[in-house]
Image (cartoon, rainbow, N blue to C red; front, side, top):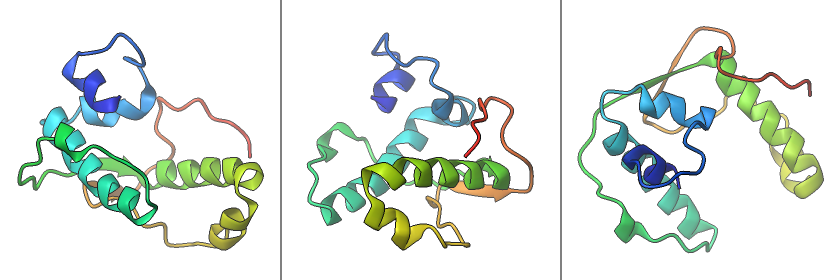
Length: 121
């Protein structure tokens, strides 16, 4: 869906805040394909079906800046969801201090991104 949004091929979720960082990048389509390529690997590990033929994966050295505060905020959001949906996974990852991110992202020091509607956890 994210790829379709960036390509202008859907009327849904066009203004989803999670896509802002891709929209603002120099190569949105290349970057979303790079991002999704890593998700294919994770999907295979989890035995999910993911149609890799929909991606046009090219060599990409781009980096998309994401704030340290945003990474921490999104991790807390994930923990909140997992607490009810998958308590075992929640308990397994809740004490992680060094959050591993996708290699396309470059962490910069800053607070939560201004586009975020902040929820209390």
